[in-house]
Image (spheres, rainbow, N blue to C red):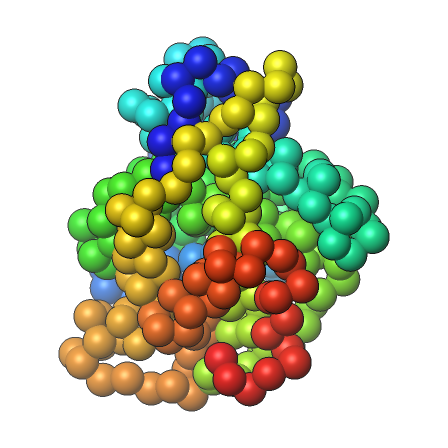
Length: 299
């Protein structure tokens, strides 16, 4: 989904994590890649290290090194050419949508959450954020963590296309977790259970649906000056988002990295088919009320 070139980007909704040194990265090899994807979009640190919900362990902002520079991110044209700027523009759009939609749909006020954009590794209140953990929402500090280089991994290792909406879907999914947190739903997925009907899978599919809801309305979101941020979706955009949803399905990951074996009992995010289904449910119906994955077994 392309940005309108003249729209303004608000960099106050993001912050820069420090560039971590290579020693900060947890894990590695095939095992590290699997943990990266299992941690993808979950809001939990599955790679070890600090207690994922102990806010006394670390301070936001993290490691030594230069912070990510946002000075190049001013307009929608910048978001169309630069991945970091695209993250910022998507954050602007997603939060603009939820500020109006959440009170209208469920009579709850939306509270903004910043995204930490970092390179390499940084610290969160949920443990070390790195290119091994992938993007996540941390409920302890109420921040979203994204290393922009993750999108290269999503394409090169897991087969998503490199379209804009594939990347924007990831950001919108994380803000789905933010909405779940505000609604008191997020903890339903933190019971330690796995499998295609588990609470964790339902939480992830709900966030996929919420990303689809945002996509339905994205072309109506505005910058601070009332300019529309995004152009209307095309069918190519939808295919791009669906390619990302399929790439992070548990069955696809297991088939790709586990020698073709699929073990449903270990699923934490849902199958590729389910992730695509729930994104499309949100996109087609356009309301968060369509995203109640806990009231059905047809996932």
